[in-house]
Image (cartoon, rainbow, N blue to C red; front, side, top):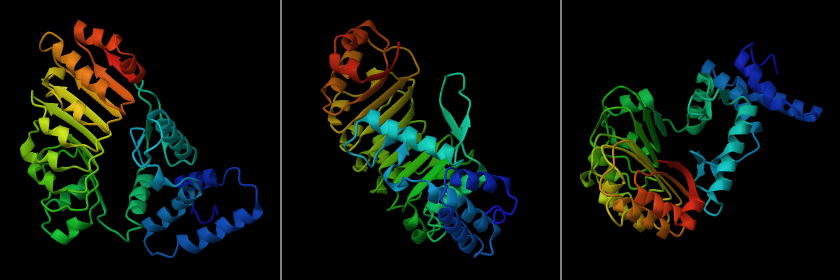
Length: 335
């Protein structure tokens, strides 16, 4: 097995970790045979390396497709509590680290728990996500997504199921045809054609960091959305958010706005909501009555389990202190 790794340190580490604790000689022989027969059947060196690293992935005793984690939120599980879901997510991360598919990073100054991924492991993850290159363009990240945005081939865009662009530093145009897109993450880059989002009828997960959002982009048409994270610059919070009846996790990060900017009945309309995070980075608007109304709407949600919120007024704090339900689901409070 070491010979098959061809002296590549990362491959040796990953394969060694995958076999740690395996005491059966037959199991070692079986794994060796699988590695020998599958690793070098392709002339592409990159694919050979990925095949070796895939051994650790295959040894990872968990159905990854049934435990998709997004900030600890496993959308595939409809019955577990948020606390149990987050615990499952941490367990998955722990096992991935044990298998050397993720690496630990020391806590930063704000005590965030972080992990990192080796470039080669990242390449393998994308290779697996694209069915070992049998479904090319199914997942587009960074440069590939930017490059393909200049392609008018409609058939190509019909294949795409996930797009992720984080800080690409380039202008990016939202495609007009992307009917099978499920996950769309855009952060830290210039975006054109936001109005095309309304055509992404299968979208379940959306993260947008843009200057201003209004209903012309058609966010109210995304009725299947379960996860939504919006970073808003300016006083407008689209009232059309109330149409997203399947939303389970909502994050609003607002600059130049406060809770008073959230239109009435938006939050109370989201009856499936389980996690709500609201960050306000500017001053207080109004006398605090708006905060009380906002918290009253949160309190009315039947499935709310976790609340992460900024409170800026005495009225808002009084409402929070006076509600057993709100205190029970409070995760993070900033005053």
